[in-house]
Length: 289
Image 1: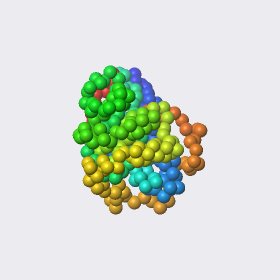
Image 2: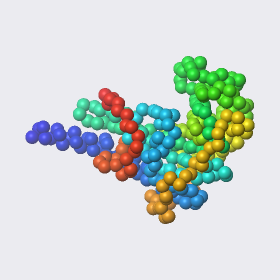
Image 3: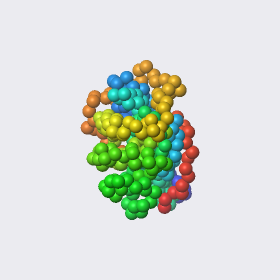
Image 4: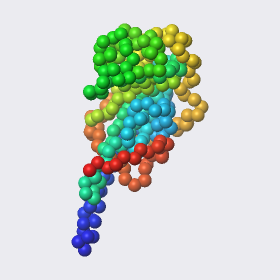
């Protein structure tokens, strides 16, 4: 009888520590999908609640190379803003499982918003990212003739001459002023991402970042597209899944952030997943004790 009581107690604790936060995480996905679905409908853009194909869209670049499993791409908007084709979505992954005794105490999850904008040409790899703490200042760095950029940012690329011509004084100033601290040119796209810490990127913030990326692309010298690139294919193709004519949204979009939006919790819904299986190799890592 005592053993039965222990099993029941442990099972109840697992329900409390996992079921509630995982349920809330699913509700947060639904909330974001509702907001973004309404935004897409108002702008004539495409919307998809989940898009597992995006997990492999841009190969092995950050944040898709970071450790984690249960990866999800959700809240996907595709469209064109002032002539700039783009895709924006949230990328979620589980980064740690904490176990205490026989109890799975918690799942730790991270969410990043990703913006990908189509460039005028297909280019070789270029990355500009904020330096990690204690990083060797010469580690993988392409020297740039701007002290502030060299000191605070890691600049990498396959073609140093392209990088030198791409990062003009105007481009460098805007990167620093706008704090565009994590973007990569891969193929015909510029991919930017930022982590959602204790909040979310609202639809207004998504639009603002799109405008910043559009302006960044306009600052790049026009001659680099002809000199170093090849013509880029369109971002939106016939292979994209068709969107429903009148999707059902979780909550109406009112054009302003919801004052009742709760702080994000950690975890995943228990039981069968409510989103399509994700076509990404799941990384295995040991539980943290």
